[in-house]
Amino acid sequence: MNKERFKSILLGFLIILNFVLGSRILIEKKLWPTGYNFFSNIGNLRISKLYENIVSYFTDGNQYEIQVLNPEKILLNTGDQTTRISLSPNDNSFEEIMSETNEILKTAFSMPSEMFTEIDKEDLYSALSVESVYLSYARKYSINLFEEFLGADTDGQTKLSENEFADIVISYSANGSKCNVYMADFDTDNYYGIGINYNSDKLRDLCDESVKKNGSEGENVINYSFDLKFDQPFGSQKTTLNPLIQVYSTTSEMPVIKAVNPIMKDEENVNETIIDNILNIFNINASTMRRYAEAGGTLVFVENNATLKIDKNGYLEYTAMDDGMELSNASGSEYSDIINLNSITSKINKALGNNEAMCLTQSDDKTIINYDYMVTGTRVVINTDNISSGVSAKVENGHLLSYKQLMRHYSIKSETSSPSEFFEALDNAIARYSEFMNEININKMFIGYNDNGIVGDKYANWIVEVDNVIVGE
Image (tube, rainbow, N blue to C red; front, side, top):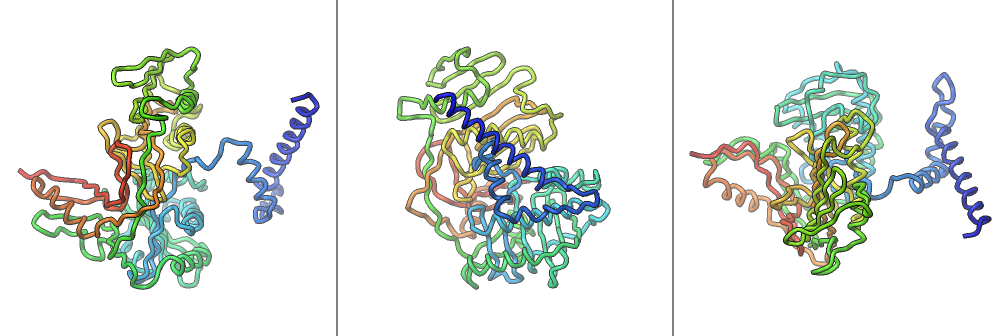
């Protein structure tokens, strides 16, 4: 490249950068002391979209970025079980509805803490029986995390700081002027609600449109467990189901997926390009590290105070010594730990050829951050001897101490399969545990894929998570 061409490219970049920075000032800043922003509506113009595209191109943000606050599922309640609709992240209306509910939650969590009131469980059930939206998250979030992810104007409220929630319901009034937000923590039996002034016309329109597009009356009836009293003990084994588990009258055909181990080019040779990318992500210098192979073919990379291992099954394990790998200069709040870990996981998934966001899932240890893979909006549950999530990372005070991932690329096959019916799956789960357990509480029951660490075809079926199990004598 000659000097004149380089100067032209550099000049063009500087002009674009100047436009980006100037646009950001105009769009994001209030320019008058009264708070009136002449440019407040500029986000609706095409120039705003151009601004977003330029920012996306010249920053680290890309389609591989993990959406940490996405609900795993959205249910649209119409007041009638025969017309309830279940949406996964791959449904067309999912993102629009999620975006609007996030605005409602942002408004609610910006309210003073004393406006949140304790409610009865029956109040939550009533909200699910009228026009409302149920947001089901794969993990619990504290109120502080909700506030930070949503950008809520918090007043440092402490009333709910000890509670975590994975289930949220938003109901809207008939005249469209108000919304009610309900939050549930079934583990601690704590339920809260708040009413806010918020025009819900847009949410109602989005829900009505989605119901018309995605379902017809009587095609697939969706009941909640509490509708059928399954949240109360039944049978000689005293089985109970989480009240918000969805009971489907029928199951739909699901695509068969194929689990591929991208680290292997063929049966004998590893993909050195992916390995080089991963080494770079973990700041391991390929020219100064020590590399060797263990018995069985596991590759080991050692440099300074870190060790990275990659076996032929695609299992990656990074271990840092001393204080660990610094993720940020922040003090290491849970919010900053999650956000900064996303960069590493997103880059690894990009190297593996994955373009679907992972799902942030539950961990009993606050220092452990877990993710599961998602395929066509459906979760893949990993279950191997080494790891029980797609990703499991230990982060403390803004430093990465360890990182594990079963590296996978999932392709969607043309063939489909039908999961078993709900009651057949429930009977099988009860039979599996009833021989040696006298009390079974089923915490989660949903359709997903199981990956046992062996590459090949995976079929959708019911995933059953049992909690609070008492072993019979």
